[in-house]
Length: 319
Ligand SMILES: [Zn+2]
Image: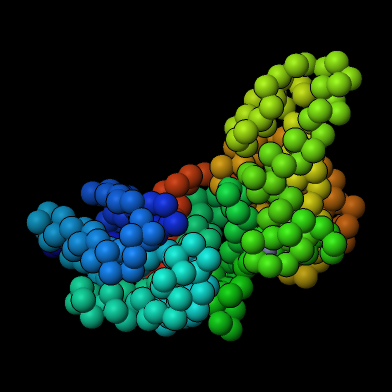
């Protein structure tokens, strides 16, 4: 009997990665290309098709039965795979991505939001396996989110649900890339950590504490924090506090079992967790606060590929 697999693709603003995903969550034949959307839509589209065909050929050559292709996309995607809007891949705005891929590749295709794909990956094979309901938070260049309710993704009426990075935490706060002010993303993402840290950096250095080099990356901020620099420690504490406020609101609204924290910044979850949990305890009802377990994601950058493949299976099953 032929082994079965689905192609999972994680399409990001910088890189496009893909693999064959077995029913057991194993990845085979991983490939990646640069997204390079700046080269224009036509160039991007032909390279994406070549990339997909290469993965299909990998599968056929090795005797796999390919069920279809799932793709995680950085933007708001309707259930039928139509791209409403994508800040990073704007040439694809208004593009029927799933239909066009399916007709070129002669394979069933499903397209989901990338943060939702990560949530599905963690739900099926990662840190969310033991939760029937949880919120996935990715803290990276931006702040992404996904909602799993009764083990299924809740993507909303138009595919726009889960955008917790754009929940307002400071009504007159920092300007966000979405055009709003004071979004969580501006207080808990990697760039936000650097900004918060730098705002306090000179103040603490003038007081004669460790004369470290000013941080330029989120990694620098974590190194400074581990060296005990108060500005860096304060930046993590602040990020945790804002995220905790949002999670407390979500706990009160949905009484979820868990919050899974992923993305680059989550490598320092221990620096964020105290203030985060303090806010949940302080602001959510006791029953909901006790129920919501805050845990780190475990799949790393495999979650997007796994989840895209998982999304194909879930949507194809008619869920
Ligand atoms: Zn925003």
